[in-house]
Amino acid sequence: MGSVDGLISGMSTSSVISGLMQVEAAPQNALKAKITTQQKVVTAYQGINTKMKGLLDAAKALTDPTAWKGGVATSSSDAATATTTASSSTQSGSLSFRVNKLASSHAVVFGTPVDATTDTIMSDPSFVIDVNGVSKTVNVTDKTLSGVVDAINKTPDLGVKATAFQVSPGKYTMQLTSTTTGTQSKFEFPNGNSSPFTALGSISPVSEGADAELAVGDSATPLIVTSSTNTFKDLMGGLTVTATKKQAETDPPVTVTVARDTEGIAAKVQAMVDAANTALSEIGTQTKNKSGAVAGGPLSGNSIMSGVTSSVLNTVSGGTAAGTSFKDIGIELTRNGTLTFDKTKFIAALEADPEKTQALFADTAQTDVTLKTGLADRMTAVADKATQTNTGTLSRLITSGNDAITDLNHRVDDWDVRLQARQATLQKQFGAMETALGKLKNQGSWLSGQLASLG
Image 1 (cartoon, rainbow, N blue to C red):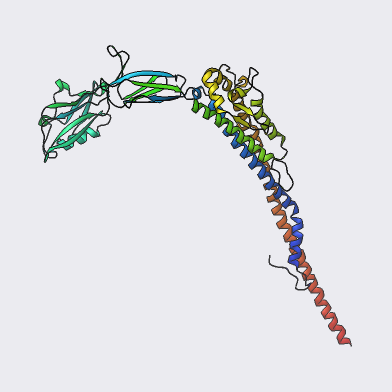
Image 2 (cartoon, rainbow, N blue to C red):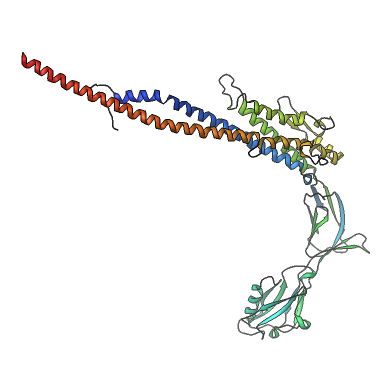
């Protein structure tokens, strides 16, 4: 409906209606303000939930036994490299050996060069090759050197690749090479290794498929360790050695040493402490009280969040199961409610008694999760209780807050309908008033005219 500003009354009826509608909309505006407040509350819970999940991940990492089994490997020679992976079997120690051999592929070459695209090198439509004792068939349609090379390379899972190379201008021959290394890479043609490629002449060996060899122990009667590749996995628990070159007899042995990765473990502990402090800081920011002109957080005075803070701090303040302080392994509380970590003290404790130090973080002797007493175990339980999907403290608060926002939005929508109807009613009423005033004015004018005619 268009403007109903009074032409008869002289009243700005649109302004009057606007003022009345502002009064009518007060309850809806109050609901919108509640939505804004509730959204800030939910956002605050979500922020805390994210930080507590970070704490959960960092704490769980320390409850994994492999986190304490990491090692740092070093090699005394460029003849071999050494790496470690964390596993329950990772062990510290050293091992000396000599690199006797590197793994090699099996390869042969044919002695008579031919034209690669015009000379036919075989008569049958297929041939058989034995790879590591398994017979495999290669079907050939183009019997030239180029066609045979293409057929070999396109045969799936053959284990052998072919290469044509130029011996003299316009003349080529072929090399066959296994796609793997080690003794299992050997191949041959059946029937006394008779070549099906008669035009290519005799076969000459290029390299023999052989395993890599490490010689461990006395040089006269060493223990030989073999691998089909140059990589020796789990040579010691969690240790992988890769041979890079064959050693001469006069070269000193390679010594590989694996030491406990104290720096790596300390970094994991630092990560848990940092994650706890980040979560505590987030809770503090969101729950701070108003101070003078500084506004309070959206969760100011929230007792539930205060409880979460207390739970995090109590994991440290409660001490170990034996009644001692975690200060002995470098972790303690400050007066302002944060955690500190002394890496030097932690590493000293770890090196002095690795098993005892690990047990103070992860109680592997207890199978019931609720009864585990390790610091990381407790921290994991606190963070999990807060963040667990659907049932966690924060998860339920976030869900409840979102449900409240949904309900408030529905109520705002209901008010939109009411206000539209109310505005239409006011416009109709003021329009009717202008019509009535117009009629009265017309009647007044008529009456004035009648009175004037009587005079």
